[in-house]
Length: 224
Image (cartoon, rainbow, N blue to C red; front, side, top):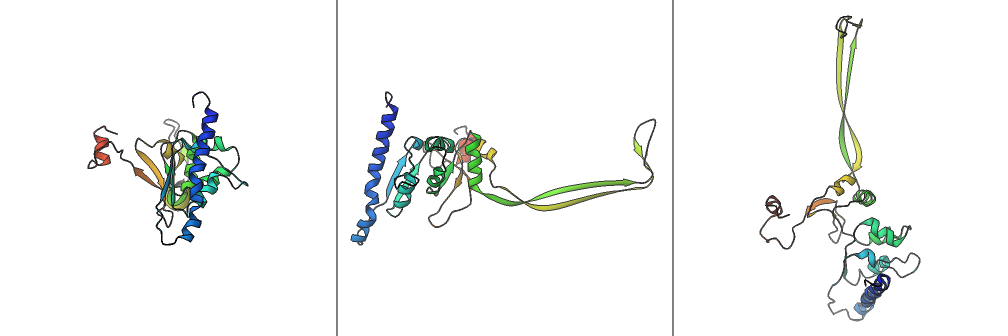
């Protein structure tokens, strides 16, 4: 692959498509053999931006492949550097959105580029929050100023202050939140198999740590 990266990428795409082809034929096999239990299949791919393809009007493409193989009990798990790297490979069209929406659960680690952080913030949605605003007013009659000290003064006066609350829509997670994620921290948009849940912050524990050691204990001990 070091001498010809393009050829290595093409071979990788062909191998990926060849592995997914039997899953496209599985629904017909399920109808012919309803008593058989078909085990789930998993598609696991790191550096997915190297192998991603989209078909748009063409029937070929990963966005259609993942949608069709869902009935075949396929679990696709892919990891990419960022959303921007995926867009750079797939071109300037909006086909990357169709590919992204076929992946129901999304896990965002720290994002360095502002474009990916902005897209991730938009995908997480907005939430209504109450914001407070303050107003202070002061009135006085026959206002004047001292020639010696320069301070303002006058006759009788009144001071008023008011506080108001208003509902505003703002991102559930701002783009800056994605840039400030620490080690083993993620913002997750989970899907439980029936419905999509609200985005939330999750704390991840690597497999090299003991099972009985909580995340916060490991962080306090400098292991994360």
